[in-house]
Image (cartoon, rainbow, N blue to C red; front, side, top):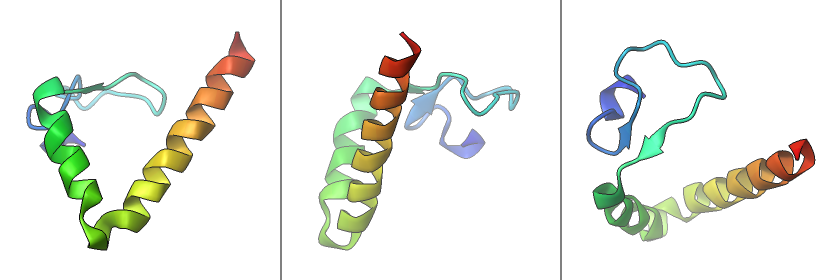
Length: 64
């Protein structure tokens, strides 16, 4: 994660993040990430991302 900071994510420069601390996806990198996940070889990774998003959304709804 540290090496991705500044390129695709933000908020991880000091290496002190805990597992549930918020990271930011750089808006200008979102298209690059989505294009990468759309490549045929990465479809399995895209499904993992979707499952993770669904899990987190359900988790956050239960906290409210």
